[in-house]
Image (tube, rainbow, N blue to C red):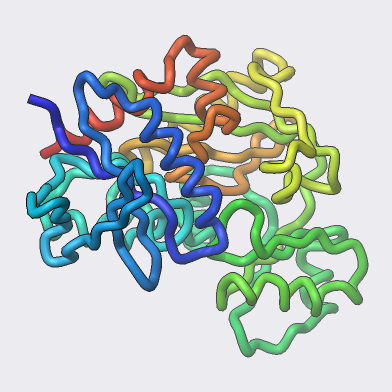
Length: 326
């Protein structure tokens, strides 16, 4: 009997448009011989099931069901395609866990931790994971430019602490730019992380549980045409994403080991895509994404393709592992 799969997409953050693209690709490629996929749009003002003819049917939040043409539909599993809040920060994971509905991403704690860059880096540093030097600010704090530059140097990166897709990120070259960069970050989140600039090769490493085994996918090298791997570089073609990365076997072995260790240290499930920059031959962690982009052009699907894993196999594997956990 086919399983009903709710593909949740949209969300409450600036990443909603990217999430809709991811969700649509999952809907297109999920094996229709095994699953019945449903597109679920989740926004602040509505949770609806959207049919192929564009009709919307409200989700009953009491049990995450939907009534379509007088027939009540419940879901065997949720495929989480929401980037940002509430899909990548633990809220959806907690809600679905209370309802006993399995979902394809990591657990509530892991999602909340990885979405908070400051907390993630603080958790991993005792395990020997290398990170940039950082300085923290909260909304309302005095911005001491001299103290910031003294600690992290110039240039530096000012980032919204809890945001993705490079929203709220600025590269600062002069001290006078700090105030505006912090203001940009605070539009996305009330917490800011300012990090030292790491000059080196940037790579993205996908780690998944594939058929019950933690698997590191072929590594992608990021070459941005812009000053850094910003929104334009990620989504508007202003970068090269080279898989496999043009790095030495020693560098590949190091970053593979670190990415796998992070996945296992955090007791992750589902997908993860970690970003690193090599400095003096050593990988420095930038961030971990637990709901990475899944369009045909996205990095993790590129890596899966290089590993011989098709999109239907990639998505179906995630659903089957989630169902097995139940």
